[in-house]
Image (cartoon, rainbow, N blue to C red; front, side, top):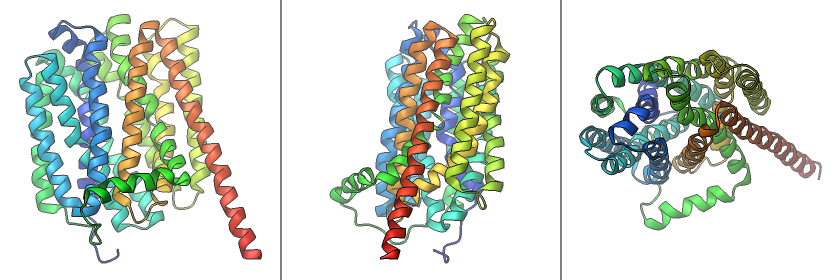
Length: 403
């Protein structure tokens, strides 16, 4: 492990940002897409939901495939697919064609998300992995942070199709950078057979410690997906704002996420990870409680809807790298599969949270925030269960040592 030269964390951050960028950049365009194709908001929402589904299933393929043939060829193939699908989205003449292109775009876009985690696990030990991952996540969040604002302005002034033209061009630039600067980090590979690709996942699913931490990691950002689906319609249809207004306000969550990651980087090497995750979930619950009070007790405003997300996302940034590191440490021989499983759960739960957001938004902001509170509350319960599981495992080890 020590002989492999770590790749640039900024390059890995660019890879990791590409998939979320196609979400955040595009979200402000949802009302415009619905108007373009003369469909309902829930029909346009499928361009978001199918992207979540594509990202989830794409990672299932990329993870074990990279364990078999290496990280580098999987990354390059995924980036090429993402670029081609982005240009197909630009030229889509019907909503059905856009849906197909979005799904294919997601299959390619998820490659950087799963491979950045796997590459870091290849080259860093557990303690350094969580810190390095926090750095990558923090840097990769910068582009999605500004993406809603930029996407809103582009949609308003140039049209929503230009968003996909820029995404495709960005993918080609990143492809060239990876071709030049991304080394192969996975040298001890598994045999490439259909059985080896499929059999790794039952191993992961049967590992109780891995699954508990992986689901906890997936639930941290799920509330953001709920407001991502509901937010544009609350701003445009209820508050009579514009796509650019939503884009500007949506920057609050990524900013909080970046700040949370910055604090986590300083704490991860000297604070118990499980305790830090519980604190992080508690911070997010406090932010959502404040948001619920503001939208329920006073007339709905942009400040009341979005400002508490700064606190919510701070908690997400504080706890996500901890949960991911604890999960991946459970499967040291299946790093690609472990990373893919976490990504699958994150995007799969994100798809459900996004669908919930599109369903509850018709009942108003209060119903939307209540859905977010339910998700974050469930995550908090899982973290408590994980802490009890850790204590139980330590007790068993202590008993065996005494014998």
